[in-house]
Image (cartoon, rainbow, N blue to C red):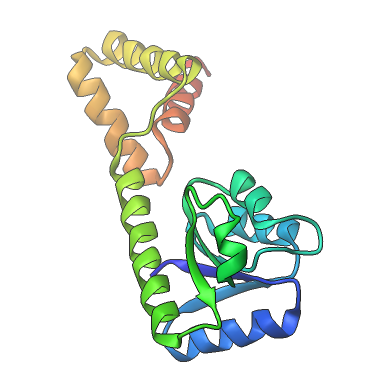
Length: 182
């Protein structure tokens, strides 16, 4: 389940929402009163849901949304009047006073959406930059020349070494090149 960060200008409000969510089975590792603190927590957690109010000590919800990683969903809790004046692109909202059922269902929906996006990103192949790809190609070429391997065999060999040593392909390529150049 996605991590949830609760951000309100008043710590009592933030803790109240956190306690409600935790009581209903959600993981809430972050409770913040500033947008900057929420951004730090988001960077540490990687993906999840921000449940927040309209204004914090250092910024508005819109500034937080602009700086938030794409891997986070945002749920804005504010009065109906305030929500009418808000730009709600990329933001889901629930008006206050809260209906607990509405809050929980919305958080559940956003949590599932965040988890789906996270899984989808992880399943996509990593895009390497040009320098990393050149390093991998050099290592494969060296394996092909020194060990008489085909390109496919050299690639599979490096993949296996990468998995066995729990390193990425670029690091494995560095190890291969270092091993043969010593």
